[in-house]
Image (cartoon, rainbow, N blue to C red):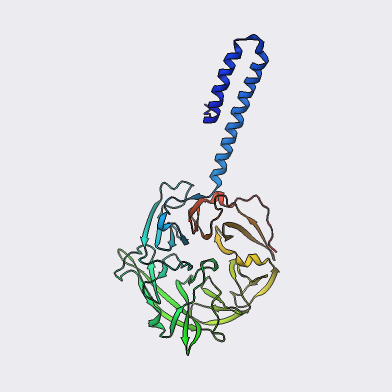
Length: 396
């Protein structure tokens, strides 16, 4: 049974009435044929147009209705096996039953107020087990489990006072959200915190490596610190952190003229002369992007070789991994990147519905991709995510 759209139905009724009038007069045989053919053409064209529009809309990004008002601005997200987590200015959100097809009717969204508004330019990290936010007191960080973040009685979360671990603490040395997370968490569940100290009226820069203990009790997940190490740069101490990355168990800290690697034991070593703005891993190699070149490391970041020249814009694009594929984002644009030998090729992905947005993170959970932005959370099926009208071309 053919179900006509409203437009087709209305036009059809008009044509039927005209047809009835001309049918009473034998002189209008030609007009009757024309009206009949016109009615068929309008029905098929209109219905097909409506069907095409409906299919196209299913490919577009959709705004998640739960993230409104105080929860509209979201700076980070992270997906685990059964849920996806979001961190905004004032809340930590969890979606259960996430993923699946494009329908979100089965999702359960829970918001937890952080207790104090987070810095507007800072993107705090989320891992599989815990997240970090700014505490109420000066120089204080809160470590809270994803599963039960609102237990404030001290049995689940813990607060790290920087002045307690370093009496010379002056302030945090945080990146803006556009440059990445201001604190990094590695695969060993350690957090690396960049901060400033003031010694003899001079600002110097240090790192704090926080090793976190995670225990499962009957009701809660309990967090505590195993130890906190203060790490000093071996030669340069008066430069701010310009980029911060974590790959596997390692951290990479970029200053204005050098890059350092910190391992899980707290050992720091200089590995690069210059600035690496972005980093990602692919197969058995690490890749670093400077202002004009792509570098590769085959020994876990200890040494780097130049691969190919690239456009400056590549160093401004944030990188992440979605279904074992490299995805980049900046403002409202998305790209897929592929290493084709020594050449990086890329194509722009569909971003219909994201005009005017600033993407802050991309995560995938059970076959559904979620985007956080400063103006809401968007989603679509992973089947519709890697859609592009463009061919892969060298990004150089």
